[in-house]
Amino acid sequence: MTPLRASLLALAVLGAAGAASAQTKIKIADSFPVGHYLPKYFTTPMMERLKANPAAKGLEFEYYPAEQLGKAKDFLSLTQSGLIDIAYVAPGFVSDKMPASVVSELPLPFQGSCQPTLAYFNLAKPGGLLDKKEFAPNGVRLIFTIVLPPYQVITRKPFGNLKEIEGMKIRASGSAKELLLKKLKAVPVLMPTPEVYESLSRGTIDGVLFPFNSLAPYEIDKLSKTGTIGSNFGSFVANWVISEKRFQSLPPALQKDLMTMGEELTKSVCRQVEKDEAGDIEKTKTVGVKLTPLSKADQDALEAAAAEVSTEWAQNLDRRGKGGTEVLNAFKAGLAGK
Image 1 (cartoon, one colour):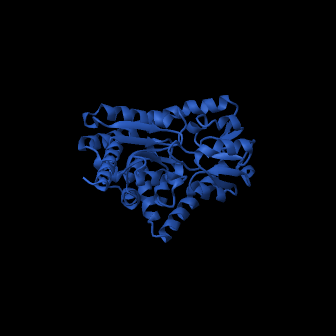
Image 2 (tube, rainbow, N blue to C red):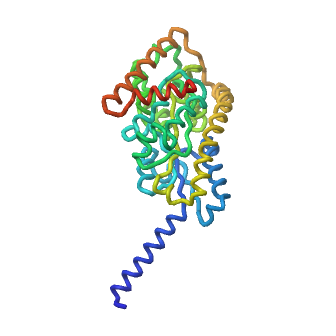
Image 3 (cartoon, rainbow, N blue to C red):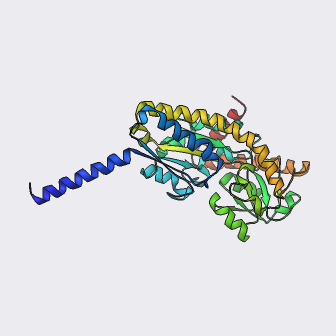
């Protein structure tokens, strides 16, 4: 064998070994801080269940929290490229690629987490309307999803009504909440969640749109003085996806277990999040944040603005050929249990 052939053979062997090594590892990544409730409720149970499946023999699971493998806004592309196998993908952070998938973030008349989560899951799971429009074309499939309870306005300084948040720089995530804040004459500032604490502490922003469940994990409550309660300023949908290519490489028994478990956890975690919210509200009050319901006049004004936002959001997507009205109507039907 010539030296050249020997070198080429060695490179081929090394390449095959590298590919085999990559196939025996399943890398899971998100942007949540260590101890956050969502990885605790989903990622850890998922890994433990998959490890126990005989079809997972020879597979090694690696979990990378807190943006260790990249920024939250890059998780979709990192999953598409194969650098991550299962990742947390928030449509609100990749609205250029998944614009219709933020439908559940609109300030629609829903309560809690399970009502919007189950309506959304039926649209986004394989074969659903959103899967056909955005997940499948992006080369990924939904495993697990959670729509968080309605967001509230939480600020660094006291406010007593909607008029007093006019001009405030309020952090938003996604186009739906951005539109609503503009309607309310506040200044929306789009930024990923991991950047919020520093921006709030420096005064770069005056407040946030946040759910009660997420205040303590990001220590936002420690920097806040006032907030609303009982209103809906929009929500946030968190998806965990796997690339279709990686999914098809898994043993059929593991594929089935992964999808069955994803649906089971979607249903159980939303119930747990709803149970947690009451305690999170009390914790928020305990650290000194004053929570006050909007007056009837302000609530009516909020709902009128929210209705306009939903219509304009859908019409904007329609103009781009994205079927916004179709998606909005399908999601509303899901909320109504149809």
